[in-house]
Length: 398
Image 1: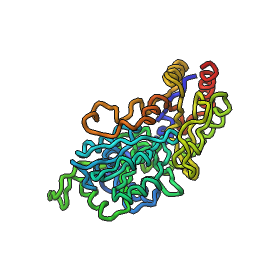
Image 2: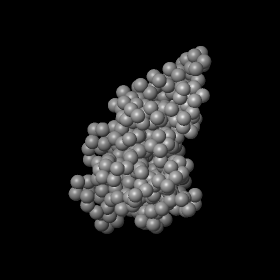
Image 3: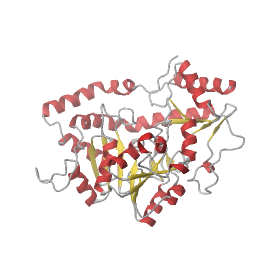
Image 4: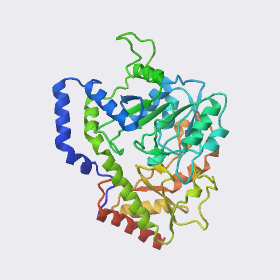
């Protein structure tokens, strides 16, 4: 039976009446930009995250760009970013006029390798952007210690990780700024583009709020060059409908992830990544996979971290084997996707802009091995079994 990688209708249509009521409320208010819907949404997000200041913005990408602008990062500055992540992380650094410095990743948790980041700091380094990739938290103790020692800012890219926790602390609230995305495919998805920027710093919050509206304060007085980073009232209203359901969405993803792990770990040739393989493990042991190399390695949540499973991402070992599994799943009409097939340091647009990519060997390995399978909360038990059966069949014949 066909299994989609994601089906947004299963989540949004049960809320159709509430979403339509939200639309009607905004329509009748006549207030479509900023306004009371956004203020209410920002307050609700502040309470959810336990953070002082929340700014609804036009997208997760714009949240990152706004953070860089508020920190006055620009030409001549360098920003540490993981090579294995979505384009926007480094793209925003380049748009700000700064230089993205590419850092390798941990092959166990997929997040930024703090040890490699430390080797790439220079006098020009002004910030580090750890990405909490796929819903898994980065090594924030390591990131924060590195930032403090070198007096650089921390911008958390939590675009995929709203609600994920690092040692009981909400990700996105630990650095100078945290940036979130509400792109429709995210765990909390809008019905269009939307994002969030958060901080506990009063001065940074005030400056970012002014930059969000073209650097204007008071009206028509521009002391800085900002941009239009405003979140539409309609998207804020839609997100307010969905936010109370977010805990259940997360539980659904966590349930599906646990089921996959239990089911697939029983298949010969498939193993679960070991805690000691992760650079966040107290022993900080080798990041090499267990010997002999398995056919497939399953992801896991780091100890004492809350993973929200934006993606359930396998590593398929062996030259060409990831692409072979992807093709097999496509033949079975099972949704799967490669996030991400090209490390950022190898993207053409960064060849004359960034630096540091020559050491990002694990990022390149991950780009050749990773494959994400359906994990959305509305996935049925029958569909999960269909996915697992297909992966088992491929593994047994591979």
